[in-house]
Image (cartoon, rainbow, N blue to C red; front, side, top):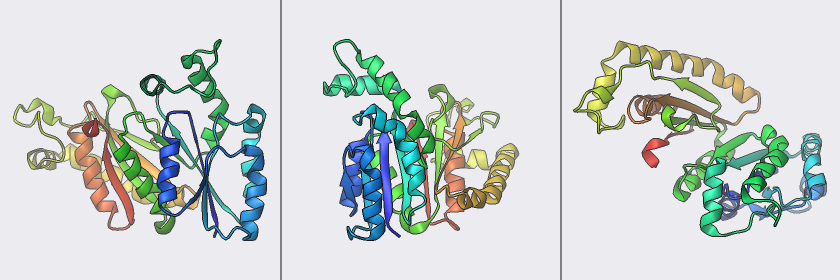
Length: 286
């Protein structure tokens, strides 16, 4: 089946990078397609006139505002055609976007002499909210390096098109906030904390001494079992509901020990039945 991937998100979030990655993987990519042209493009794709199996288009705030308002209804109409459509929405927190624009010295598409950069970034969020709510996959690039973004797109977009459900386990520290792109969030701060053992404090959940410590804690094994049972029961229902990408986030205080350990353990287990599983550790990549 022909696949149309719509890339959207706020300026500076990494949309151009994602398009370049998809282009390298054989997608035909169009940057800043006028939203009003989506129906015509869909008609040509459905008819097979283009001969292109996978196409990705970027639709963002550079579009005419009136056209952006019509995007949800346009996308709903596309579902009636023999065309597999998915929306990927990229974003980052406003402070990160401000920093990226300041460092690159690029002009924001909505900023003017009377509209500051901060106001433009906030306005863009309002304009794109209807598209964000329709996204099948949201990616928060606030703390992502270019390398990590490339790996995420490769594993979750390109490979998932051939392997079905893409499942990501992400560890994080509550002190730095909950990941905005998480579908399911577990708080594991109630578990015994290796941080209070001075011999383990500087290590992470990837290190054997920490793994051995947590393996010996009954509460940790109970939490792990409960999370595993829940996911085994309900992931098939998410997939049946056409949700191809699931991010399960597990958070502890610093995102260094308990959440990392559980992400690795769950990732290893679910890799036995799901081909596209990855573990990411937000705080360890900073």
